[in-house]
Image 1: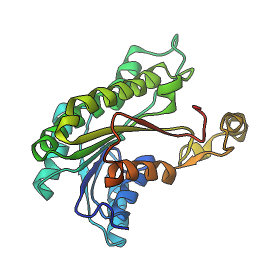
Image 2: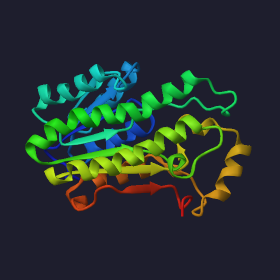
Image 3: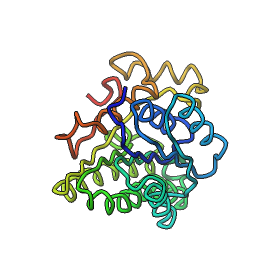
Length: 248
């Protein structure tokens, strides 16, 4: 597949999990991928090596995208290495779950900064380049927790709901420059972390999913790849749920 040939894609938080899957899928479809990571250099380099082994082109770039300097440096790295950025996937994020009475203010701030502020900062930096060439795709990874809320996740749900608002507002703001802005909202996704959940908890979750199964990382990556493609040129300001029907 080469639907994304000659496209330069930046994926934040791409060293593992959903970000890794997105980076691999975009590369499989022909994009050159900047694999962003904060601390996991070995994991990020492994993603790059896997892309290169498949005949693709990739570059690992360290940056803390929750800071303005980090976000700007990441987007600058794409311009310095390849002259442009065509696709930005804002995936970086974290969780610090707890009930609100036990949650510390710093845990709220950390999740907002990592999840929402990073998406805003990277979008701002990338939009400058995209507006000059009057084209681009920004795809934000939100969550069904941002659509429905989730007990014990007031910080995470707020950050992901904020990403939905960011997506819709930015789509209106930079759409006239030929840039689309969309979001993908995964439900329960099988990753290295969730595979270790107690079976009892998994059994409780499955009845909530009309399709009766968890999503895979690849399911999310396919949705992102579609929104990054020419086929999605008239889609903007939308939230595509990949949750097996949970939010229906």
